[in-house]
Image 1 (cartoon, rainbow, N blue to C red):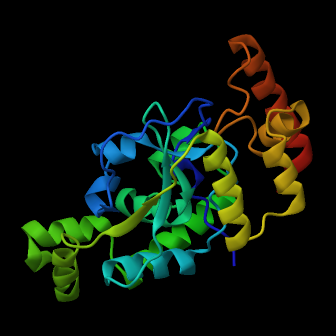
Image 2 (image 1 turned 90 degrees about the vertical axis):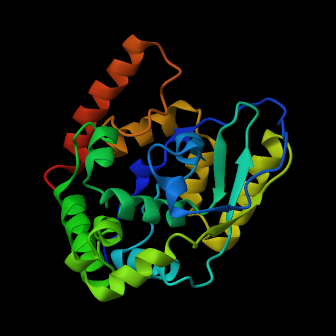
Image 3 (image 1 turned 60 degrees about the horizontal axis):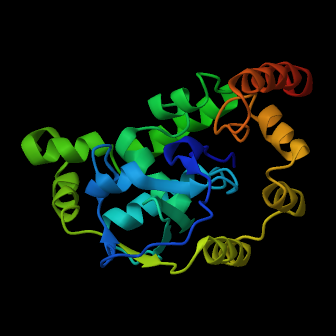
Length: 257
């Protein structure tokens, strides 16, 4: 089954090569409210810039996870690391967080966040998968807007949604924290992710050599010069050149589909 692209829902950031500050007690759980645009948590959550794209789950797995959360089933903890400047990096759990964010914003790879991230360039196949996912969510779970509506106008939604909407106030996902400097965080990331789902050797080479020209070029061409700008440390003029050349090469390599 085709995979759902949720890569745009959590921004990427480079790990800072500074010592980590860990003042005070950190959050132990997050709720659905922490994943809304105006929350402090969502504003500072990041994926490491070398993390592979968040597009490994198909729509069935996404729906199952959202169902598990709403039903209060046991969910593995999200593992985070706090950088010295305050960003909260996802060491393990980006698909889980992104699935809930996708549900809240009705963005399964074709919504407003994704369109902005990819400069409006979204393949037809990605749009089709997003629509299929949206239909499956609506059929099996109901939209997030339905759950919000249940709080104010319960007569307008199904009875089962009303009870589940009440449960959302008490539901939370456990957090675990990696303590240490940037090297510890990066080592933890590769160790955990290799255990969960081994990274393809070619992709691992891309991740480990992410600052080298051939890897930057490969990432630019794959996404037609859109998405996370792995080339952002170049001058504005060179960034524009990279994006223009990438768009041309994408046409030659991948179009027509």
